[in-house]
Image (cartoon, rainbow, N blue to C red; front, top):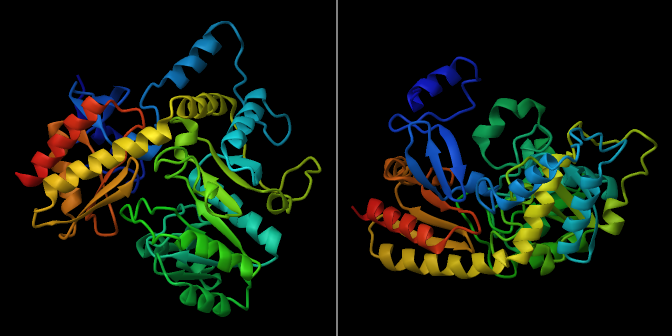
Length: 413
């Protein structure tokens, strides 16, 4: 039987060395998974509180996936290509229709891609087409993808620096997350050579450490952007469709464009950019060759799993469940860890929870310490000081409670 170490050694022989993390101790290679449980190649069981960076709202091997698999195995031939900009599949159309019915009424038209970063790129291109400008305001801690077209929007300098000579850094002004409107207005003035195309923000920053903005801040950003004939883009790739207790933050914030990913594919690669009618209509009518497309955009299998995932999120009331269960767990963690000398905060919303430590790298240490105890969590924040908890939205309370108790014991030992 191959071990975790054996397989990682084999991976190292064929993969770019930048691609995969290899723990010094107790490495993990997935072999199978179901719901919120996963097993490695050596047969060890883990409670998964990562859920594929939030991309598995229904857990592993979900009902949505099973339904699609059963459908295709029932004798109906499967369309297994996309060709979305020429001949769309029925599943692509059904997916977009389902997505739209769940979004705020102002969002009229959407475009599909594969990854969150690609959805942000569509949003950025849309803003530039609509405003005929190219200046963008982003925020410290922001993570909007690593594709070259959007890399300048991502805050991490270590991600940007190797490619700095290619990036349009002069078109981008970065402000503190939660910055006051005076600072935003000043940044808009500095962007005058380019003009304000958009302000882009995450409703809650994920990779930066589950950072929540001041109350009313997103609404203020929308007002200022519109005052200067710019747009507000919400990056809801991590937070959208139930994670923080709502389908979309645009239901309460007058955003012009939202980007969605992760949860909407139920574990399969699909993302979407949705916008107001007049904003998305800045794109020209396709003459037969789209300005922005990709071979696998709107792939039928991903769209089929995604559609059923969206329906399940809605029918099972998973956003409200995330809100209720998340608040309960946050209180549990706060009560258990409030007196710990290294714990500085327990924060988040819904099932988007972060435990912040005063010691850099301590959350990364907890990730490694808790893995052999059968729990999968990830560190976040620029210094690895925040432990992120983002389980499947339908994780059982009993399993979640067991995992949280293991985390508390690991931190307080």
